Length: 496
Image (cartoon, rainbow, N blue to C red):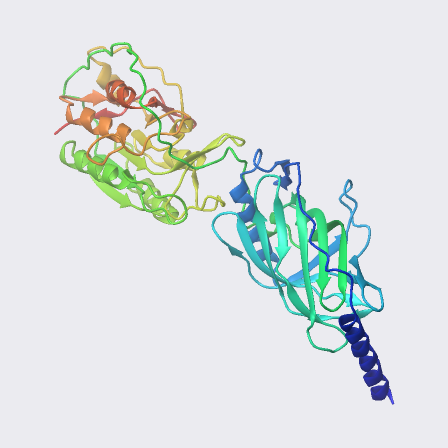
């Protein structure tokens, strides 16, 4: 008896669907134009601001793809909401269906399929199964193949392509599609908000609009995947125009001698990164590193370890090896050429290994990490030469003392932790130094080749600084490294 009743109900539903489909419905409703005037509000990491101002547009799409992946497969709640409070006012969206029998259709929560595809610019492709309900009967629908697109700071849209649904056990003869014009994204809580439009055609025409929230179960704080950063935080080496030369104070002439006792052995760790896997490659970092390694070994007698296109693990492993190899009498030079980045909000600088991702800090090497590693290495004199953007964040002002005949002997006895950087807090050139070198490293190589006798780092800096400023709008800096154990010494170069 029950099976007969079920068959009868299915027949009634199927007949009703045929009536809805066969009788002349009203004209097919058109999707209304979406013309927002305000930039989308973005919240991430407890900070909120406007898209395109506080947060970079490309990062919004990247973070969205990561959040979708973290939540799929799973349920995505869709609810009507109050525009001002951003709170749900019901548990499902609704629309009106017109046909022989007018009805109210509803859309409950959707089932988010696994995965999301980010196109590398501003679009994310995802799939969502969104069953619709008419007369209390759930339809069977194909997956809605959707696009989340960041078209501009004002226009971020989640749009489903038309998908087929069946109702009452009949054929899939209903076309459905939807749009959410987003005005609010909270990555911490996993919420989108905006104006929705639902359209149903063929099996009766339906249409509905309003304000809605789309809610994920896992936000970015919990997922710990992609981090969306402020717009100003961009890893870039800028091509800058040549600067007009401004005369600098004449440096003191170096005291030349090769008779300083107790200098110990000289070691160099030289790193050059061109082939970045996830961000823009560089042109000259590898050739710069090779030339620096060559001059350190052949002209100054350093024992050199050369790392080319090194990942984070390779760089940190090399630092760890130095910690257990060097003695308190030794000297260490570390040269880094590669991408650098300044996080203006945390006031922290970073080196980028080749496996670094712009959207995630997991593979970055912070200046504080470098400082801690240098503090643990026993060598008496350590110099870091950094040819990267924003490299000046590693340093603080250095007081250069006057040179007397016993100057080198005095500073040889004191610990030194100094950095020679290609610029302060500005981007620096990745070319322009001749022979496939950056401006800074080209000047460094020229200066080192002209060293006649024992020479301190301050003198090297004074000579190359003039050369760099003649060719580019960047100003090298020379200073002690903050919190690394500097005690008034300086690095000494002794040609063979």
